[in-house]
Length: 45
Image (cartoon, rainbow, N blue to C red; front, side, top):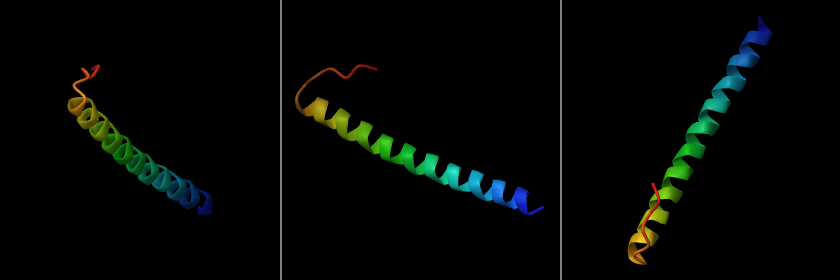
C-alpha cells in the first residue's frame, strides 16, 4: 500500500513540474513574439 502512495506522490510532482515548465515555455514564447514584433521579423507559426 505504501508503494501506491509513493507512485501517486511522484506522479503529482511530475504534473506540477510539467505545469511549471509549460508556464515558463509560454512566457518565453510570448517574449519571443514581442521581440519579433518589435524588430518586425515575421513569426513562424
